[in-house]
Image (cartoon, rainbow over all chains, first blue to last red):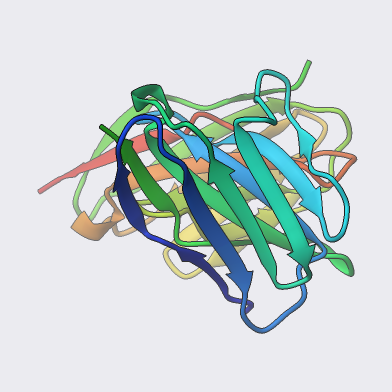
Length: 116
Length: 109
């Protein structure tokens, strides 16, 4: 099956700094990338959807200036959490989709972000 | 609005059978997924149903009734490693996944 590599798997950062999370599709071209956030004991919450070469579409309540998403190529999408605060501590997961296989979702391993 | 409902937590005994139910109301339907998620890990794919009926895959089976907006995941011969959260997700008309809150399954010896 298709592999999505997400890095880092965990990161601890100081409040006020920025953190970048990368998601790479290793053996396929991801036309669409989904970014999710998951708080403890809760389900995945979609933050934004990005298509290669265009601006991301953010879900209601997600600050686009705080969570910067770049999808510059068909194999790489990044999420940057800017000016992180402790309440941004969460599990972030990316998921990739291929245009001709829209019902399949390929997940990255997830990134545990802790802001201290 | 769109809604996925599943029990918050279930407990079962090792070696037994457990059924996790999921009901949904969504804008369009392009299939229902079941995922397993261990703590601190990303979800892993278990099953996909787009037509009514039962799909069997080893110890796991998934059932779908589109007219009732209902699905269940059946786990047989439970093992301790099956302790995890099980997420029900529906793909809507825009091919976007709508997620349930997940069912935490606790397996006791």
